[in-house]
Length: 481
Image (cartoon, rainbow, N blue to C red; front, side, top):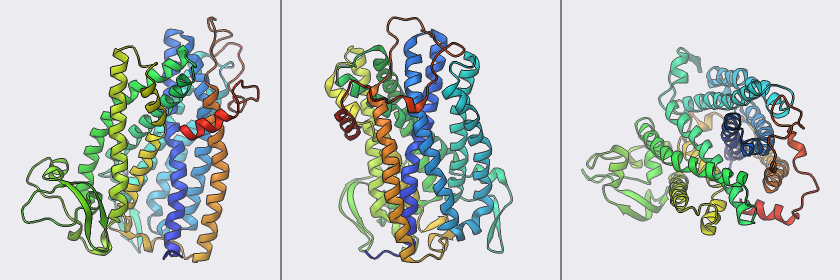
């Protein structure tokens, strides 16, 4: 069907499940740190706005965290069911790394998550804040181990192959492989940026509907400060990451650039737009800027970038896909920087919270960080092909021996269950966002704070049926964010 084989369906299935999963950890990482900042500011300033925002976003964090855990378990099973030969080949490396993630990050998060969510009126302020910080640290430790495993697959080192299996010889080299620092910084920063635009979009939605209060303004202000500062930093990290990829995976860079061959000693142009054709081995309708490819990728005006024709056809990534996924990521990145700069200009004019054109932009930029993360992952993972472990094991040699019918049935089941289950979860999250934070009106920390009597922040109690907004707003927000 459609020229697909069982291997293609196995790849599509894993891509589908990881695309769903990665959205939740990205928001979890950003929101955990955001919550730690909010509680820290509340403890320092005693401003009830920060406390109210903490309770609001902790409920959304809890729902998102739960969906992230559930969606992550499925991928672990797929290593054994669909990619058993990969697990047999590289399991001595990837298995311990994922185990370290569970023993350090997951246990840390699980140990303090209950105190963070339900201990607000049961423990002291210091312990509660410490629990929030530990959950935030746990999300970053989890990112560390997951990226170490994936980066090793991109730039493997610290091993030897004995009897057809990878045997670790240097765990420090395995963990801190050449691409790991860049990929870790790139992913963690992407999570912070994605969360900033998610929070900013939520605030913009409320402001556009006339709900203007200190909590909503604080949400937008903090989100735009984060966008202004972190989005340009992400661009710099991306540049270093690209230079590292050029050194260790030149075929991926050639595919990203849609660059097929070098002409004499000419510098490499930058192809802004075009359509790389893998069969004809050329990029159709190319719009080029001379010298700029060499300037960006080699930081010189005379060095050439490796071309796709420098590699055998069987070793070339699919340039058609990664060419455009990369440009979607970069395009959204520039739009994020523009949004941050516009917010600064409006802030100086004291119109940040009233400029409707900007608020609409902030609203529609809500999913931009998540889309950019997906585009970036497509770029890096498809760009690694045809290798599952770069230079060591081809993807075709890594899959289990399943039939086309078996893979078709399981793929359909995954699509149906995921859209039903996580679609409901996302809908519930949008309902929480629509309700907005509950504001303490003119009261000084009523029953306030850890260690004092207060109803615990139960995630599932946030969206009751007594909301004064009609159900139509749920659908509107779900479509707009």
